[in-house]
Figure: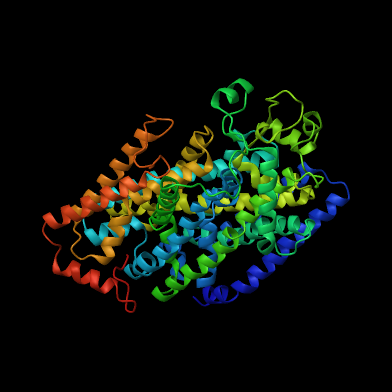
Amino acid sequence: MAQKSKFIQDLPKIYGIYTLGFLGFFALMAFFETQGMGAKTIGILFVSFTILIYAIIGWLSRTAQVEAYYLAGRQVPTVFNGMATAADWMSGASFVAMAGGIYFGGYTYMAFLVGWTGGYVLVSSLMAPYLRKFGCYTVPDFIGTRYGGNFARFCAVLVLLIASFTYVTAQINATGTIASRALAVPFEVGVWVGLISILLCSMLGGMRSVTWSQVAQYIVLIIAYLIPIFWMSWKLGHIFPHISMGGTVEKIAALEAQYGLIKNSPDVLKAAGVPAGLSSMSTPHSGVPAGAMEAWKYISLAICMMVGTASLPHILMRYFTTPSVTSARRSVAWSLFFIFLLYFSAPMLATLSKIQLLDPTLPTAIIGKKIVDVQAIEWVKNWSAVKQVFIADLNKDGILQLNEWFMRGDVVVLATPEVAGLPYVISGLVAAGGLAAAMSTADGLLLAIANAISHDIYYKMIDPKASIVARLTVARALLVVIGAAAAYIAAMRLTGILGAVAWAFDFAMSGLFWPLVLGVWWKRATRSGAIAGMLAGLISGTWYLIYVGPTFMNQTPWLGIDNLRFGIIGASVSLIAMVVVSLLTKPESAAVQQMVDDLRIPSGKTIIKHS
């Protein structure tokens, strides 16, 4: 215990040295680049060095204690839990795909940022402190104990599996995209490299190793995200991009009017041979669509991301690791601060990256130039070779127009250093940051899935007398099996990163949001009501996804609720089903209702004790 306390006390010093060491490595790579080291070598060294550090942290954090494996020993200080939660949260979608969404979709994509950030208000006010007071190991553990009975627990595990597995395939997709570019290997190989890296961090130490790895990953990802933004801004003559962005946005609007925004038809794209998933700039960067339906689409997407955030098990379980209820609430505030640093900067990155291509006064501009000259640019050749960018001379004039330049939104952040003419060491840094973001979230998701099955299914339902060794062995074996299944699915590239993440949020809010909230705040909520809410919400949401999904039945959405917003349907049905069935069934016992009252008292002992 004394050793653990000293370790906790030394955390600022340990991570301070780690940060200086990483910055020193960055400076060393920059020096080697000036001495002629090749881009491929720099990329490999950046990715390999950071993965090695995470693996060492995972090895040093190995444990055979149940509480350390599932809850990091409940010793994680608030600031560091905030950093770990931010890393857990800022996935490949946030780091790799968010700025790309704004880049091609304009500021309507800010609904993702509003919803994701606002979700933490719900987490702080409705969930985190009370679930910490409950003392559960997993989110299904709360459902199973609060409502009682294995079937309620099983339903919660089912929703968790569907939401988390959908989410983790997107993260492994992101690791594959980054690894394939940095290591110059095929995407299908990259996803397996990413999976092995993820397992190195989580398999031996569970939540403890994931926590300390995520803190290290947050430091890498935030440095990697901010340095290119400030570097590009400095090249444009601005010191602080967040203040000077207004002028740059106005300039982009003027250039869009000058070049003309044209939306290509599917027939034109097909005839030109544009690869699937690539987009051209056809939406005003800062334009706000008019009309009530457009406003509703923005609001409904923000609602889905907000409620989905408060329903995701891998985020909620991070607050189980704090020493107290108070520290859980403070951790949410620190999480918001660390997330804010990146989200506040994502629009800057999209804006500064776009102006590099459009502004004819900049040496990096390509729009309006001869296509043959653009195709000879080194970074264009490299990204074209891996089918992430494409040029089609649609009007046959030999000049690159705005609607003739195609790019995959998921690679905007990764390609920006090369687009802006920054040293390649920045590209290596961004690749390391993107990999850290995807790995940290994938670690948390795989752990949430494996812990739910090993603890809630195997230990609570199949073999309650299982030894600690058996429980941890099952959890570790599940990490490998589930990770391999996710990598296999990710290699198929069934959907983009941002779309898969939105689906995960919708699945989670459809099945888990109301059973969790009402489990804390409504004593009249019953086991039958919770089961009805979880199943009705999950089934109705899934049915609606199939009904409107472009790759499924592709029917006309109701009231603009498309496949990214199907959680609106699922959560609404879940609430109605849970309230109606709860009121129609016998109230829970006085002991259970007293437990719910005690749960909302901040002080005092945890509700349940684990063996």
